[in-house]
Image (cartoon, rainbow, N blue to C red; front, side, top):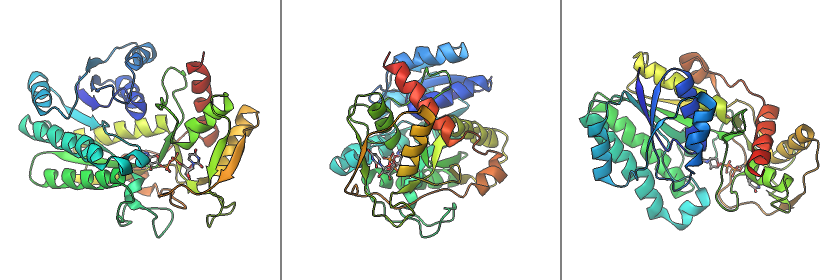
Length: 337
Ligand code: WQD
C-alpha cells in the first residue's frame, strides 16, 4: 500500500484530501502543527473512513524535525498543504509568510530529494494570476506581480518546485485552486476559520446562524453584471479528488513534464450577490447584508478554463454550487450544536 504524507492534513482542504486518499486505498501519514487546525479533525476523519491516519504534530519550520521524520518513514509521495493563507495577514506580516510558506517547502523538498521520495503535489492558487487579462483563465496566463506576500509565496513556491524537479528525480504538480468552499456530506469535517472569517462562505454561514450580524459585500461598483466581484467557487470534495488524480498521474509516470500546473475550478464564475441569492434559495432563509467599500487587493473576476485538468488528469468538478452552499450550511449547523 502506497504511503502518502499530507502536510497540513488536519486543515480544511487537507482533511478532505486525507479522506479521499484513504478511500482510494492509500495509507496516510499527517504532519500538522495545529496552528490553523484542530486535533478533533483526526477523529472525524476516522469516523468517516474507519481508519485513523498516523499523525505527527511537527512544525515544518523546524528543519531537524523534518529531517528526523523523513529518516524514520518510508514515504511514496507528498501532498503539501501546510502554509499560512490569509491574504490580509500576509500584508501585515510578510516575514511570517516567507518563513512559513517558503522555508518549510524548501525543507520538505530537500528531505524528499535526499530520501528518494519523488512524487510531490503542491497546493497553489489562482492568486498567482492576479487579475488575468483574459477569462476564463488558462494555465498559460502569465503570473502578474503578486498583490500580496501570500500570493508571492505561491508564485515563488511554484518556481522552487519547478527548479528542483529539473535537477533531481523529483516530479511535481502544482494545483492552482480557485475558491474552495463547502464541506464533506457527513458534516463531520469542514472549514474552521479562526476568529472573524476572511472568506465569503464562512462569513455567510456565520451570519445565517446568527454569529455575525450581517454580511458586508465588499463593493458593488465592479465592471460586472451586478457590480459585485466574480469568483469560481469549487466544492472542497471535488478539489480533494483532483489531488488523487494528480498523485496517480505521477505514480503512473503519466506526467509529460517533470513539473506541471493545473487550474482546479469549475469553469463557472458567480458574483457575490449571486452567491447570496443562491444561499437564500438553498437554505430558504433571508441573509442580512449591506454593500460597503471594496476590499483592498480584491480583483474583479476570476474563473478557470478547466480544459487541461479534464484532458490530462481526467478530472472535472461534479458538485454544483447548491451542493457547495448546502454542505457549508449543514457544517455550520453541525459545529454549533
Ligand atoms: C471572495 C469574494 C470578496 C468576504 C482568497 C485568496 C485565495 C484563496 C481563497 C487561499 C471576493 C467577497 C468576501 C466578505 C465579501 N485562499 N467577500 N465579503 O479573496 O477570492 O480568495 O481566498 O488559498 O488564494 O486570495 O476569497 O472568500 O475572501 O472572497 O464581499 O466578508 O467575496 O470581495 O469578491 P478570495 P474570499
